[in-house]
Length: 206
Image 1 (cartoon, rainbow, N blue to C red):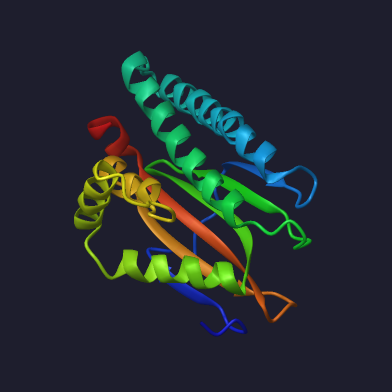
Image 2 (cartoon, one colour; image 1 turned 180 degrees about the vertical axis):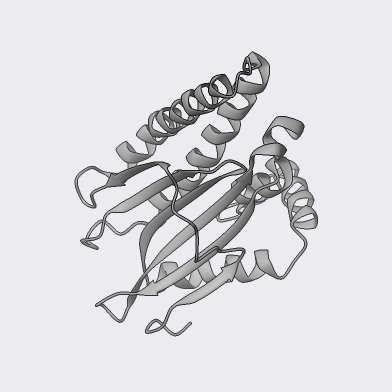
């Protein structure tokens, strides 16, 4: 991959309309050990999920509807799962000395929720990530999902298997996209992973 130009893969939406409701959380590089950040991922995902849950309840009530408690918890669980998986992937690849904060943005729309998480990569990490994305985008997600599940049952090495990303697509109906951008360092890039979650899919399938 040419590290001097931007690259887009999958279903990445570049020209999003402005969202009236959004949440951004940043993680400064090098401030805390990766292990500690990993332990806090679930806390951050819980916060994001509760933020969306409150938004969803308020939105339903403003339209004169009484939110269904079961559906509301399903929505919260879906948002938490996706946020946690995206955070774990970003923390796995984020460079501690990059000088660029990893950040996750939750943008809320009437018909979908969009997660965008950005982190930095060095050349070695870029190769690993790019190889997986090429594999993901060039194959059927359902086939990859079941192949990975079978590999898990056989206790094969599942490092960088991308099971979390596959679950977002196959279990929650999300679409995924990636955008790689150059940095001042020719050996490094930033990558933004975008997960778009249709709200109707959450209510109907989770």
